[in-house]
Length: 419
Image 1 (cartoon, rainbow, N blue to C red):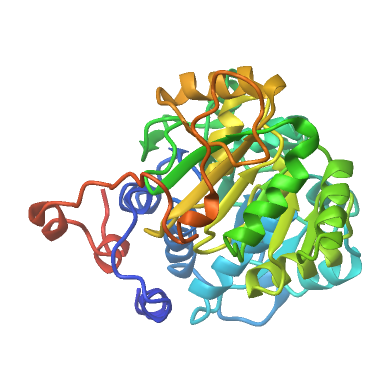
Image 2 (cartoon, helix red, strand yellow):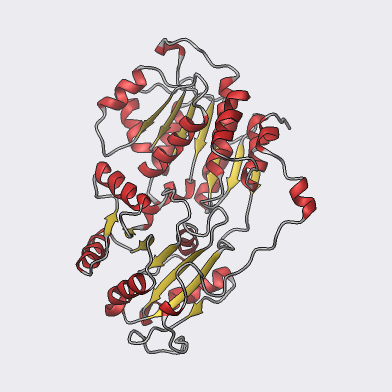
């Protein structure tokens, strides 16, 4: 499809990622798909490109809203991820006649209603706001041909499964279903089995395997010294873009305010903030005017930040798998990154659980003046002895062989392929 290939070429992409190489032919063939993929694998393009191609083949060029019913529905758990996906749809579909719209909560309904009334081929939505539109009869899902559930495990975590089941009941029985998830807990498997027909399964990386390009280090520290250590690491290493994870919304606000008092440009992002404030904060962080973004797990899900160099676990996650999701925000697209964990004595069992999950030890370092008592402490090490852009003991991914490069399918060939 020349219109799609032109848009893809403008973005500078020629080689597909593994998820794209496997998923695109399956989607084009019309099969249901279960995709196991972590964040940062290119899965968004893996479903938007073939979805656009299938819809373009039967696109209506009329300007009449009635000629543009919702034919593809993409559901995501968070506002940020919805915005990211819809932006991808617009970017790759810019030279087609297809229309897209974005609906999510936290903003006014009327602009979304107006967009829906103008006709929409592809609707990207969060579950709650989509059901609001259905209830008000401003969204009609009776002609949906392709359904995409993105980050299904996070929808489960956020309590959206009931809403998803309500949405499924509103859709035509005959449709193509695509479900993507980083993990597949039992409830997600049951949900998939309830509506998918003989789905193809695509898995691009072993479950719970952290990115190869992420250097991981743990700093033992007393809980009441974490803020001071974080400020020390940011300043002494001159870190310029740091995503910091905390457990609670209140904790995110408090830490951001404390860092500001230390002279470090910081802000928090979480579910209690207005969407306009979240969008503004994220834009500042991406632009580099904000050095530290403090976030909860749910708020950070779906953030698409290229070449993010540093992720900090300020509060260790209680669920070991969440650690993998967190550090997956860095070390993306072939760029090295560093994941730092500030581990209090009380959190050592949580780190031990993470190490068992990954089947590897996380290097432990101490910083003079911040050591926590205990056996995990390594000889003192001053973090400014190494430039910030050189993570310690960086794992080196094995280079692809000449043969594998030669046989790697190009995006253009994939979009013309059928299986």
